[in-house]
Image 1: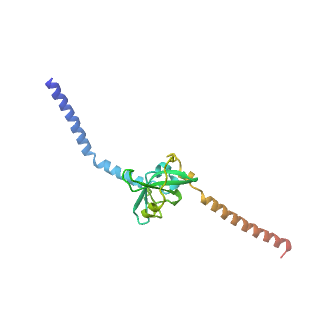
Image 2: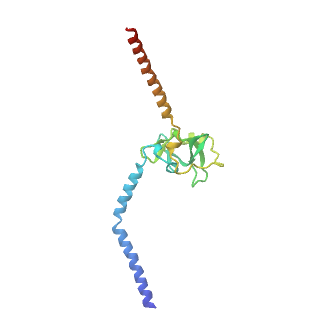
Length: 182
């Protein structure tokens, strides 16, 4: 029995030692891979339109001075407008003050992993607290581009209408000139 126990102990010790040697010899390679992965993630997004609700949740919002002011707890619709519900202060969700702000107010920062708000922490804390009773987050796979209002299409339509009417007026003047011979 002693021989069997001694052999088992030696085998276990060899496995542990082998794992420690393998881990120490390869320790430089994962650090480089981890850094490359971190760099790729830092440049993940160039626009909020590329993101999903799940991508936005958990991101940090910064004020114009570069100070972290809140984390996005979830995204919900308030009066048919997509809003990010921000958790301000607190510890592990306790004592947190929550406000909701339209997603249109969030600008993606250069790091691609956080947002810039044109407000500071005191401004957010002066807003009425968001009543989270019965509120649900939008599904994580919802594309932000699908829920944000599309102002640019309306602006483009107005520009097209103006541009389209100008040449028509010019064309009509040309036709009148040709008809009258002047």
